[in-house]
Length: 272
Image (cartoon, rainbow, N blue to C red; front, side, top):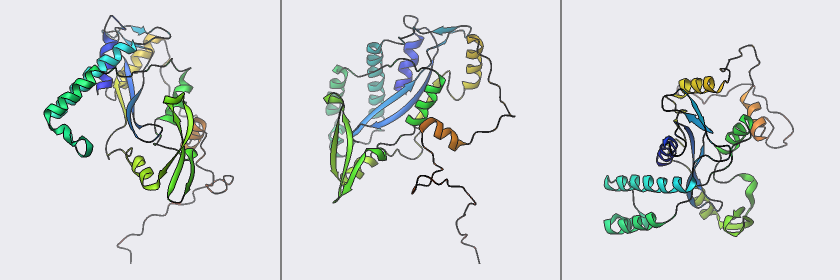
């Protein structure tokens, strides 16, 4: 919520963009070493609608919004939300954070956070729609670590590759006890019902259809036509095109193709 409000607020400011934008926000909670590193990745259009909805306002080609201003506005909104949650007793402070239940300790922490520069990073636009889809296909549904980073599992220890961004992004090996490896991995299993991908602004679920139709019209882009005569592409083929993963291959030999013959339903408890 703090990230979305920051982007929407700053983009509406006439001193910057002066437009109503859209935001697709994806929550990630891990770093390369599997420790806690909560952060939000956002995809935003390169512009937005004017306040009256009659014009498309494009951002500069290689500049969207000033990151320094974004970081400080985000810091203020995030810490304000944190204070609100604390006053409403909505924070569960246990373990090493238990001492923060004391208001004076919590205020000291907030003072430190207000003085610290927060990190906001903006990248150049994607090359086009295919690049956006490829990014979404391989990035939005990632888990904390993929199998190709695992090096070995033996003697109750797990060794995996990780990239140390504090050391010029050098690739290193880390070995953890299996229990610690599992603990770190489970830190990033989100609570049931928590939505990790959210949409705001002109691409919010409530406004998307109407707003996108207006954007297409202003940009001179033909409306989307559903081609019912075109052959329907299976989700397995789309996944293969976007990620290079073919789920139809046999997991053992990686050559034979698995074909579903029938679905085996669980045995009914009322069966004779």
